[in-house]
Image (cartoon, rainbow, N blue to C red; front, side, top):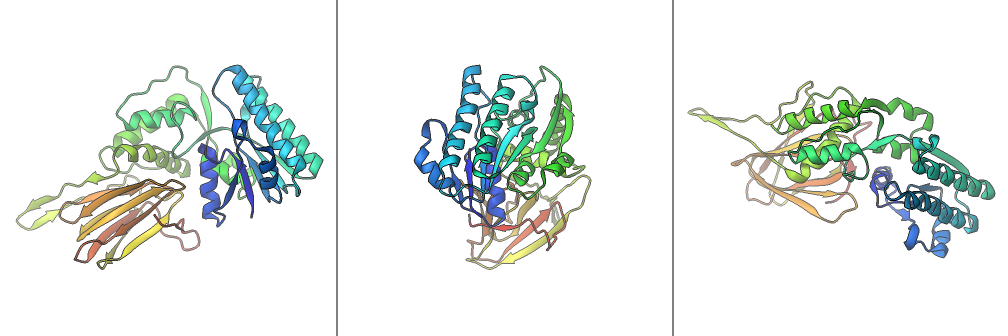
Length: 364
């Protein structure tokens, strides 16, 4: 499947690329808009696309920047659609529920939808105007993308956010939005994954996560929404503390070390042995919470966020035990670079399901 996308480097664009990668479509054609737009290149890159996804937008700035930017981006995409040699089969617009109101941003998004719909009609493409609510998810940009990102950033750094204006928010995880954008989830099913919370309720839940997780424990997670919200918080906490130092309790008999304290559920525990020179893992998860702990021998855990180059490295040994919670949508691996057999304990929050393993191959 050929997918062309604007905003591929942004928050929702990154989540959509991760989803496509997990589905076996790693190569997304990125379409620059705004000052970097090249009309000829855009028409060429759009040609023959199974799906054109327009994500790029302006949601911060002066009224003129917000209104002008969103309309300009739509006009650039529409112009490319009209002159592409082979029109895209489907054009999907990541719109906003604010298009139903009368704000500057809402008016601009509504006008952008009209421009794209006209272009789709002119070339015979199907058009999907997807009205998205407030999105949250791993690696949102604090003080820009959404209040969830700001709260997570501040809490993970020991700060105490406050609520200036309390109101209800309709919240949807970015991976669910991505599923609709690429056609993996029907738009009419999206509402089943949206949860309504006040800003105060959202902050309270994140404060609870932060308080429990600071001790190394895993909080009780009520449902998939809770899991996605906690994984969102973990993506910020990982930036501050990628590993947990464990505390062995020793006496004449030996030692006892707590590895996982998970409130509200058992999950699945397993262990592996790895001979010297061998690496395990080389995959990522979209939703699974997974903890690695070296029990004996020594090894190196490596982690890389998808579509990024920087690698986070944690050395671990049985003599000085630490635990690492693998961030969602990060490729990860553990290598035995010692002289003895490496024994590693693994815990995940869910039982392994061969029909839905949530384990996607990807080298660190």
